[in-house]
Amino acid sequence: MRARGAAGRVGDVGRGSRSRPTRTAGEDLLLDEAPAPTFEEAARSWVAAYAQLGQLRVSTQALYLSALEHYAFPRFGSKPVTTVSRDDIRGLVVHLLGQGRSQSLVRNVVAPIRQTFNQLIEDGAIAMNPAAKIGRFLRDGGDPRARIDPFTVEEEALFLDTAHEHFPRHYSMLLCALRTGLRFGELVGLQWGDLDFKGRFVELPKNKKIRRVDMSRQLAAELQRLKTARASEALAKGWRQIPEWIFCNEDGKPLWKSDFERRVFHKIFARAGLHPLPRPPAHVRVATTGERRIARVREGADGASLDQGHRRHLSIWCRDRTGRRSIGST
Image 1 (cartoon, rainbow, N blue to C red):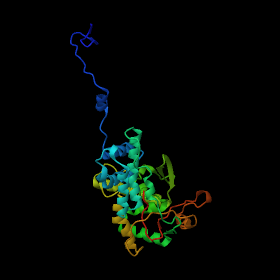
Image 2: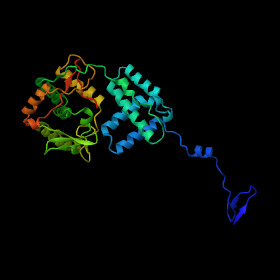
Image 3: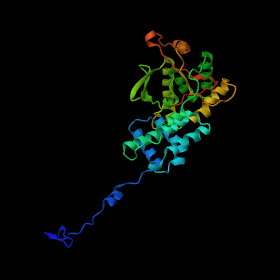
Image 4: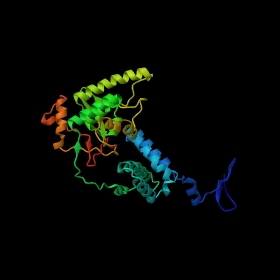
C-alpha cells in the first residue's frame, strides 16, 4: 500500500514497515572513509605481500624488516601514512649519514620506504611518494676508477685454510663466495633446490629471470659433502629434515650479515694476518678482464674447462684503494 506522508513524500506503508533515516553526502563520506594506516602497518603489509608473491627473497625480506625496525619505525612508524612527509625521510637519511652509517645501509632503509609508498599510490591512499628521488643524497662521490687489489693466489689459499681450520662450519660458504662471486644476500638465500650437481651450476632469480652461475668441480664436491654433513647434523639434533638453507647457523636459520662479519669474517682476516688492523667493511668490486687471470688460473687448477666459449668470469673478493675488505652488500 502506498500513502502520502505529512511532508508530501510517497512511502511504503504496510505491516512491519519502518521509516529509514536519510544521510547527507557528508555523513556518507565520513562513514565510508577508513582511517589511514600508520607507516609501520603499511610497510609490514607491503613486505608480507611481496614476500608471499615471491617478489622478495627471504634474506631480502629479513634485511628490509631489520632496517625498518631499527631506523624508520622509531622515527615515523606510528604516523599515519598521509602525514609522513619528505622532511621526515630526508631527516632520517641525514641522521644516518651523520652517524657515519654506510650508504649501502641507508639505501637498504630507503628502498622499502619508497616501495611502501609506491604501493599506497597504486591503492589510491596517497597521491605522491615522499621518498621519491631521495637517492640523490646517496650518490657516491668516490673515484670510479679506484684501483682494484684482488686476492693473490697465496692470499686466497691462506684465507680458505684459516677458515677451514678455525671456522669449519662456514668454509663451504666462503669457498662458494670465492668460486662464484655471489653476494652475501645471494649466498644466505641459496637453497638445495637451487643446485644442479649434474650440470654443475647454481640457479638464481634475478630481475624476474633465472640466472645460472657455474660451479667448479671443487665447489660441487664440497657442497655435496656439506649436504651429507647437514643430514647427519639434522639426525643428531632431532630435526625432521635438513634445513632448506644451504648456509645456515647452528639452529638451521639463515645467517645475518653483520653478525657473520663480526663473529667470523673479520676474525679470519685477523688470524690469517691479511690486514694489520681491523677496518670497516667495504664493497666487493668485480675485477677487470686483465685482473681475472688469477681467477682463470685458479679455475684451471681446479680442473674446469678454459675453452674460449666456456671461460668462467669469476668475481674476486677485492680490496679497495683504502685497503678495506668485506663481503659484498646486498
